[in-house]
Amino acid sequence: MDGGPPYNPRTVEEVFRDFKGRRAGMIKALTTDVEEFYQQCDPDKENLCLYGFPSEQWEVNLPAEEVPPELPEPALGINFARDGMQEKDWLSLVAVHSDAWLLAVAFYFGARFGFDKADRKRLFNMINDLPTIFEVVTGTAKKQVKEKSSVSNHSSNKSKSNSKVSAAMLRGSESQGKYSKPLQAKDEDEEGLEEEEEEEHGETLCGACGENYASDEFWICCDVCEKWFHGKCVKITPARAEHIKQYKCPSCSNKRARA
Image (cartoon, rainbow, N blue to C red; front, side):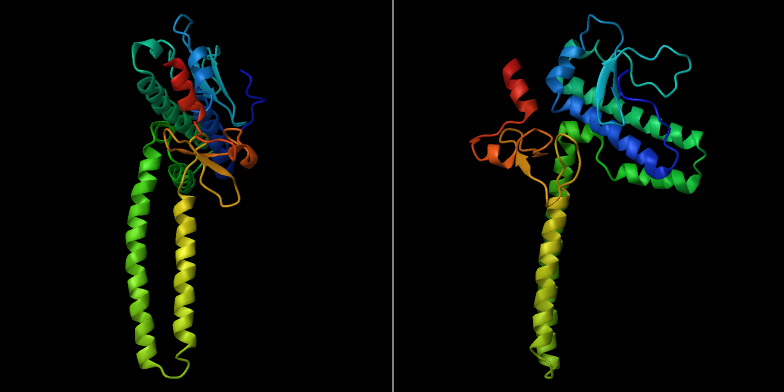
């Protein structure tokens, strides 16, 4: 396999970094590189597996020959099911097995290097904060973000009302400094709104790599599936985006080409 030289992550942070790299590679295979992945999973070939590597690369290959293998092996024979079901269902199935494999590899390292209960719990919580590959591929992660945003907006409206009541109470009860305190309350309210807006955007996930939104990065939204992508993940620059009337992500473009 061409995933680079093997290495053994020994700390919780290193295992999590390994997990994120492999996860990013597999998400790439099932989203931005889906056309190439589809072609490589030829049902006429032998048992094939989808591998993700710490370098964020992916590979479709035969299972390891050594017994027992150096690492837990991913699901065998993903290519055999390709033409027997709808493509989106097949990709979802591969995504589920990929999630299971990633957890197996992460906790294999944990067992091998003697993680205790606290380490295992911390590793799981770090992993659990990321959406699963299945959630990214099926768009479930985006729906969860929308639901969170709705709850967040409701809380925001409630907190703004409370702020107004507090400011009014300050004006009525304190004559000394009556201008500074209400102004301070207003500033805090505005800062809270800005932080909340940043937090709301921060929950948006890239449809290619599954990572969170960052304010200093360029993003673009697909006009077909309405998923957001890092410009670098789909190779679109801000300058190029200005000349695109209707953007279609690689996955939507490939679906249309096959149709």
